[in-house]
Length: 430
Figure 1 (cartoon, one colour):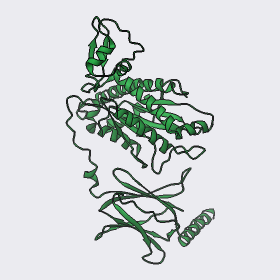
Figure 2 (spheres, rainbow, N blue to C red; figure 1 turned 90 degrees about the vertical axis):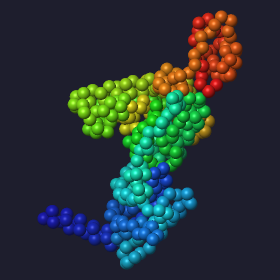
Figure 3 (spheres, rainbow, N blue to C red; figure 1 turned 180 degrees about the vertical axis):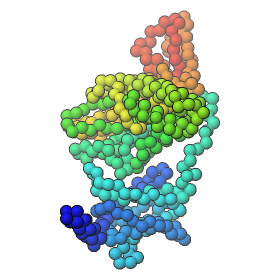
Figure 4 (cartoon, one colour; figure 1 turned 90 degrees about the horizontal axis):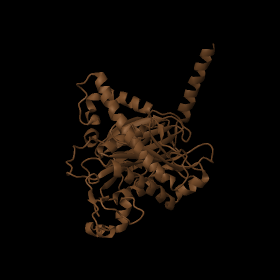
């Protein structure tokens, strides 16, 4: 009897939903480098009918019983794929949304369940029609004999995911992007270094794709930038994380399952012809080495962060963050400050403090490369000068065409006194 009553209630709710329809309460969109994302806030889970039309190219979404309660957004002239969105009703009880396209697309349509910030959502991702070939990893680029080191900078969150939000409405995704851009500028201005921003604007990139983009760029380091949050508004300070041992083990197992595609993770050694034990040993060795260099990088960055403010954890912490799981790129995650702390939220909004964090991370990266510059890079091939009797720092700087201040800074010298036989490192690029 109870079961019949429950089924009757479910059927009644379905009738109510059909009669009143699903409301579209908001529409947002973001441009990512390889696709355009539309997010529709809907009042309930929905299964639209999706199909394409040509001459001209259009993408159509039909929602049975749908009602439009939101304004249709306008698309800027530079938006890929989409000219405009319009609505109509091809027959009673059906809401039709039409995307007028600039070129054919490969759509991916799915729903997202409610979370702490949003209700039901219908997501429409538009990729180029030749998606597989357009997004294929480019062929390896021949590098010069000596190359710059590449630092991949990953601003966390983005697009539909704002990250943590401060008491005064500051969004984590915005402040970490601002800090990342400043850090990229500092790295690009450093001789022998170049920066690659994983996220350049306000759009979301899946976590594992962030790793993939760093590997495509052949990054030597990966730095993910975030702003922490905690229920206690008094929590404050910066922190640095590397991949935990448990996270490394699970990642080794994941790559082992696809070892025929993982030869470049262990120095070009093919794994597909190795037995499972040997393949696992090789991957574990690769991850162990990467974690050790990640720890050294994290230590250098943490020491610099200590100089500009409070540290939440006084040592490099370990966690299983997905973005730290690249087996062949030393990776750290930097929590710059607590956005949930009103005082630190104000600092995160300040360009002055954003520069403080960017400079601290940059100094840590620079110090790391002084000791661990990869072979074949300009930093690894820097010149060295052995001081002879009668030489002064001023004369040596003039000989190499660099400033005295730069020579002293590069060698961590606090005074101009030198001794015979002392070895100086001469920075690349003057």
